[in-house]
Amino acid sequence: MIAFAAALMASTPMAEKPAACGIELIVLGAGQDAGAPQIGNADDTGPRLLPSSLAIADHVTGERFLFDATPAITEQLALLDSLAPTRDGLGVDGVFITHAHIGHYLGLAYFGREAAGASNVPVFAMPRMAQFLRTNGPWSQLSELENIEIVELHHDGSIQLTKQIEVWQRKVPHRDEYSETVAFIVTVAGKKILYAPDFDGWPELQGLADAKDDRPLYLEMMEVLAQLEVVDYAFIDATFWDDNELPGRDMSEIPHPRVTESMDLLETIPADKRAQVFFIHYNHTNPIRDPNSPESKQVLERGFGIARRGMRLCLSETHAIDGAELQMEQDQR
Ligand SMILES: [Zn+2]
Ligand SMILES: [Zn+2]
Image (tube, rainbow, N blue to C red; front, top):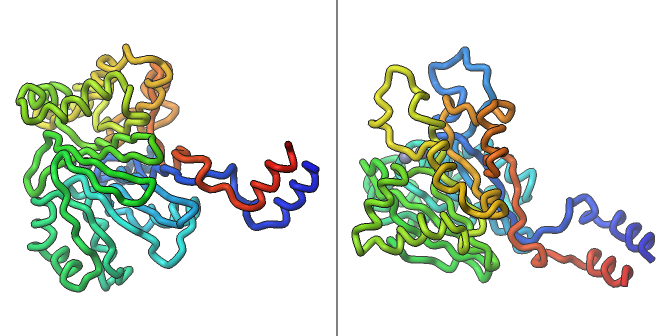
């Protein structure tokens, strides 16, 4: 009977697919805003980096959501198309923007009439970010021509995207020239994913924690992350490896948590949870950019993970059982 089921599977297009997954997280980029090689670094022969972005793809409904819209969005959507094919040309059902730094929102421009000519793609943004988009070209034109539809988010608020997907947002300390900066906590079928690609550092979060009104931020970002009892997967800012990374520059002026510091802080959490912390948003100078570097090996040896473009996590397995796979299960009984 199993052989029959296998034959049935082979005769269906679904047999081409890897193990069934209902809702999947796909890493579309893991670099800092400028990627790598960075502009002006033609002699950089290290591994290529695209700016940080995550996709959540529902293989049953075909819905696809992006977290950050990077300048490399064309290539990143092509990658997404190859792993989670779309129902239509663009196939973007919503974009969540963390903040107005180039790696996180410039990709929205490709929804305009010079490129996709999209129709009312929901763009989820905090109030200052939303105002920035509405009042500055070319973003204002995207809104006026209804290529995008701006949906305002609020600190410590959440939005139920689909039956299975909910997104919460929390403000985090960062250089907020044009917008707030947020971390997102995405709940998919009961699993929680923290996406915090940019924040000033752990002491800065601690500082906010002491202000009573930001206690929820502290809970989500420190206690919860440190214990990982609520968050299942965490993607956190790993812009720099340590304070010696940019010779000749005062790195205190570029606040970000250092990878070495984050590992020290989080090393007491249980090994199975530690393995679900992924470093993301690494600068072109960060040695974890190279999977074979001693620093990358050190991260893995200490039990943490490093986000890499193309990485996939299945968040909900049962959501996607199709007819053929059900048949197979019955046959095996
Ligand atoms: Zn950034
Ligand atoms: Zn930033």
